[in-house]
Length: 323
Image (cartoon, rainbow, N blue to C red):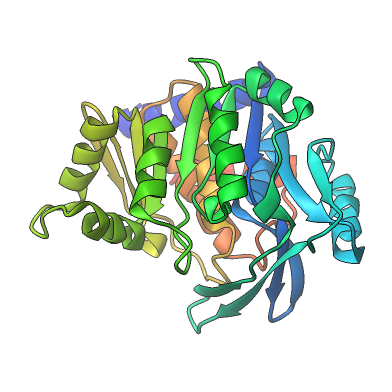
């Protein structure tokens, strides 16, 4: 058996063992909203999408967010029921509406977002229920978008401060419009174990932090790992795959070629699969194979949370093994 086949078989077995064995409590904190796509609205928000995929991959995924006391908010709660997702940590805001985002797609399926302000998830509150959740969580996925308001930013940071030392903090940086600052990014990185970002976001960080324009992507990732004591950086490159970098090595993946319908949610699916493999101690190559396969599959479907069942997961894993 070739080294490549051995590596893929090992990754496949890691993944199956993860699904069958311990269930980790994985929390996505931040925005939940309606993505208003050209074909209609879809449940969205990066933390919510991430939790959807983590749950489909066999984990105990929990969304911590806030909706308005309005019909769109009630519809979100109904949607979570239909998706078999926990809604116990969704707060109801009496003053502000449920969040929504206008999504426009270009001819390559790449999205452009108009994210509406002063909505329920701008006013996240650290109540006793959320405090207990922070203490119990094995993984926290968070981003910078939900920190655009001082109220939610303080809630998210205080939530992170309550976690255990061994809790993994995944920063899916998600730099949108002008809803971030150097201060927000740096403070978020100081709390993080893993950083996920795309090539465009890496260039934004280059400018924010004053890094040399001559540094290659891998060198920038290594610099971030050193400055913020990160365990892993995942740099996604869309149809060109990804780079995973840790403190000692890196792995470049060319990606899987699919017919792209839209890429909304593909990065969140990638992050969930990446995390599953990371938790199970897989190699950078193994993590890359499965994360890229799931991410590319989502980009070949419409909307951020296409139906994903065990048969589809098995077919995707088999495709990884045979590639």
